Image (cartoon, rainbow, N blue to C red; front, side, top):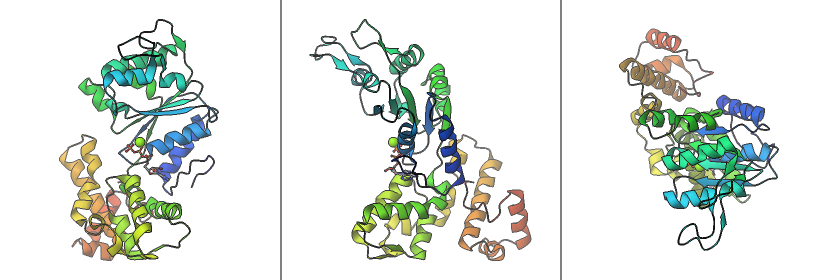
Length: 329
Ligand SMILES: Nc1ncnc2c1ncn2[C@@H]1O[C@H](COP(=O)(O)OP(=O)(O)OP(=O)(O)O)[C@@H](O)[C@H]1O
Ligand SMILES: [Mg+2]
């Protein structure tokens, strides 16, 4: 658990610990940080962590989702406008870059930003100044930029919908936050953290079988989904949480579907080679069987209807041991 700042990032996962170490190294520089990860993995909480631990912590921290607004509103929101610059501009308005001046700005959903705004963002980052809509006088800006994206922007660059030069400006420190299904050891500490957050002092215990179900589930909504599930449990469950208290989708997830979902990355990475996908499935099947049998290789091999020697050969081939079965495939 990390609580140097008012932002608490809970994790027992080595990759997350490395991310925190990486951030701590650059936190006091002005380098732009880009957070990439699926919905709900914690991009915003990491952005807060960066700001609150930086030398800009006492200065403004401004957040905006670039997917939430139509083009003209977005432009005026980011850069502001002068009085009379368009019909409804009755008064001058400061943009978010001006409001964030001397602090940090968090541009969420940068993958959704339209090309004309990309061009203007690039200008701000290169010139360190903004021009309000309808304005003629550049205003100097000093901000730390943090961005977040749900997908690898290189895919958008290839499609021509993201500017290469902007990408290099914002991607100085790239940080990939893995999905919760690839760091299942975080499920227990996160659940305890959220129970404490929501239980109003009431004691809750999660039964072993309920915890197993939570650990087996694929969490498409990642930490946010877990947080919401725990919140609901603290409202309705008795002191001991059993599998029957869990939402249906968590209780009933088809184990095969789960293993295929855990291989999402093979597909997302656009690596569709047959061998790659098959290896990914094999690794997940083996890890799943080991997790279920508490690392008993004979029982795990039996569960997969495989000879023990074949099972061991595959463990060796894929470098799987009991120390790494909870880590990402
Ligand atoms: N490691 C963590 N420790 C404690 N809380 C966490 C952690 N990761 C995420 N959370 C909490 O889970 C919720 C979702 O996280 P967050 O909003 O940062 O995700 P996100 O990646 O920005 O999602 P989206 O892409 O949908 O905007 C938040 O309430 C956040 O505080
Ligand atoms: Mg977010």
